[in-house]
Image 1 (cartoon, rainbow, N blue to C red):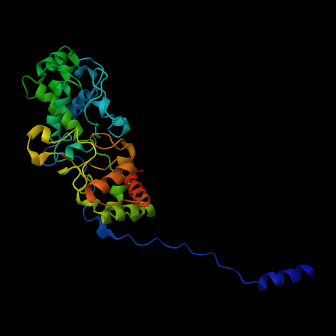
Image 2 (image 1 turned 180 degrees about the horizontal axis):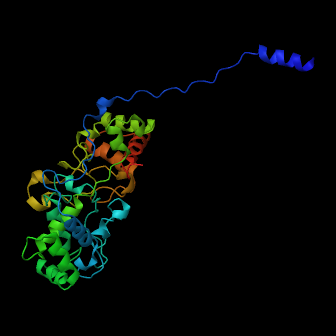
Image 3 (image 1 turned 180 degrees about the vertical axis):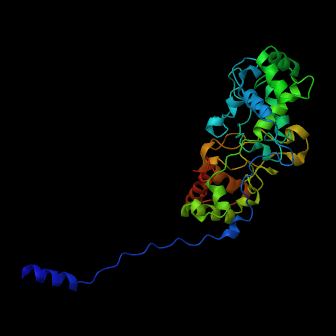
Amino acid sequence: MITLLSLLLACSKEVTPTPEPVPAATFDRSKLAAFQPLPVDFFGELDEPRLELLALGERLFRDPKLSVSGKISCNSCHDLETNGADKLAFSLGHDGHPVGRNSPTVFNAAGQVAQFWDGRAKTVEEQALGPILAAGEMAMPNGDAVVTVLKNDHTYLADFKAAFPEDPNPVTFNNVGLAIGAFERKLVKPSRWDKFLMGDDNALGDIEKQGVTTFVDLGCSGCHSGALLGGSSLMKLGAVAPWPNQADQGKFGLTKDDADKMVFKVAPLRYATETAPYFHDASAPDLKTAIKMMGKHQLGKDVSDTQAAEIEAWLSSTSGPVE
């Protein structure tokens, strides 16, 4: 009897239904107008080269024999295992001394408007040869010295012949640049951000989606746009408020034209959460600081801690391969 009464009382109680999850607000995809997914490579209209050329390019990229001390390679400053950068404020040259500017990631470099912070090289093929001869970097005395080192290694003779089969004299300094450049044109690493751009609304979380909105609404996408989130132009650093560090005047150092004072390449923001510190002078040790500095000096806006955190969360979706 007691059991039956208990059962009747239990059934008479109002059952509270399990609440349905509240759907997240629909993302406004018009905010994505300034962005594009990564291409599969950066050969553009060029034919994809022979596998032998790509293999030679990677070997040269990783080989410390291209430095006068035999201690550093391209990969030393642009470590492919750490998103194409070395995470130092200033990379160390062949003699252990720091170079003059922060080393950016090599991933997607071939898709940028120009190479180096001041844009002095137009292509990755041209850029690849610069550090090899730079006194404070790999410090080889000249291209002939590089060729001599390579010709003294019989395995390189075979590799160059395979990579440039129609060239009667394949081991040249120019071909070193062509090989490394070809390898770098394959350095593309899509991420969850690309999946989102291609229509997968679930590729990003709500805070990341809010970060995109904040980024666009603040005006950051005016410069940091396209497939690389930057890298497509050179702009004055400190457009609204003067940049604190005026020691390096950017493109002006090349042209001596007053219009080029403090003009630098707009940094691409893919992999930004993995490639601290930031800017040519490594003046921002963390990404939130960098975001706030950009707001102040480029846009004349005080970016809040919340806004900076939202943008940082979104940028994390651009790092690493698609899961």
